[in-house]
Length: 302
View (cartoon, rainbow, N blue to C red):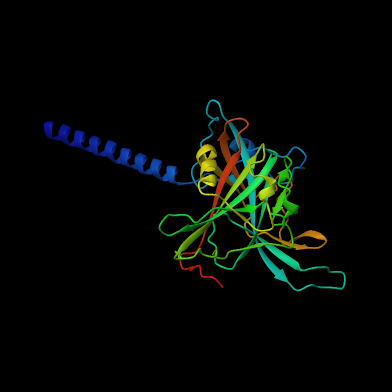
């Protein structure tokens, strides 16, 4: 009898142990998985009140499991919507065509990029203000190159960086595009292996740069200038990617933008990815957008 009780006790112990291990592994698996099928209201995403709703609900997914939570005391949620397009030029067609026809492929912001690719960025936010885009190279040793003000410049929107709430802004504007290309090194500087191009998108309630400093060339920041912005305004970001839109095509030309292929899912949103941050009221929104290169890509100048 004692032996049977002992076996039962051992069996019960093993059962409890196995169940605990299964629960633990399951919990870890769930924690590592992202969330899918999130409706905007479930994710706390603001919607444009002037946009019409589509026939199918727009849903979002996250890389990490999403748990709804209010903004910390003294802060409020703000968001910036960003779409990255790969730009490919085509030959002009027809006697009515003026300029160059282009095709845009909607890219995943988590995708890997290559040297020489051309991109265009669309930005939209329910918060109006002054838009700035800072560009830096990131290297394999974890360091960053000098910070340059990619927008505004006088070559895009004539330097006007004031945007209204829910106003979609295309940077750079058609027919221009940005091309991944290593910067020119300073004298005596050694080129490093570049692993990413890092854009920082900022929407500020007031101007941050004297307009007299803006020219056709990208402004190189003074030492410590951009770093002070990061120290004051950088905060944790939650990323929501719109589902079933990566790879979508549009054809752009002098007469506007035409949809190619599947029906556009942009009745409610003008962005592929929503970045959500908790900020103190009246402070700038700062979003860091690292565009990583493929592992085999070596950034060399033309």
